[in-house]
Length: 205
Image 1 (spheres, rainbow, N blue to C red):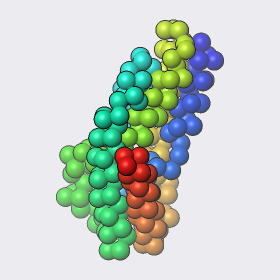
Image 2 (image 1 turned 60 degrees about the vertical axis):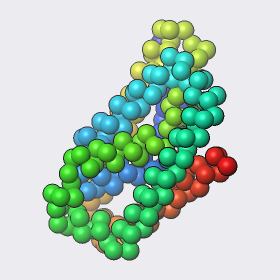
Image 3 (image 1 turned 180 degrees about the vertical axis):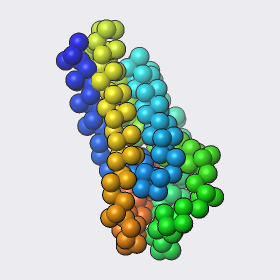
Image 4 (image 1 turned 30 degrees about the vertical axis):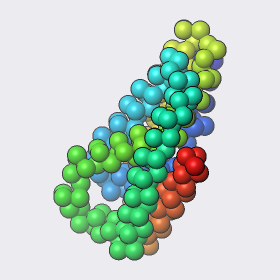
């Protein structure tokens, strides 16, 4: 049982702990103190649901349905391109730095943050590949009891990671009091978004 929990935790960690669109988004919201509990909770809940679906055996259906994967890829590419442009614009204008300085409530509306979190999480086809197809495929050879233990290990890592980088980002606040650090972060976010969008376009065509 413990071995299955550890296996689930290690697989989940290897997939989640990487520089990607979602992690950079959570990090930035943590630095801006933008409803970070809701941001981390949404990311965790999405992981929990998708991993559960994958482990229950639905992953193979999504992975073999070319139409569904292409539609997801197109939607994801469009969103990521838009988000990438927004990040570059923010880097040029220094919007993120101004936001953390002013803490304008209009910039921190909960609905806006929730929708952005859902978009950056669910419009990225890689999240389905990682949580549903890969995790589900690895768990496919396990017994029902082992699958439950595997799922527990996987979702525990997801919970610790998203809440950890969300609230842990505040430790970097002194560093990000410098405007140039926000410019670098926004530029990095833009580059990552464009790169992932490029990979999605290649996948479709």
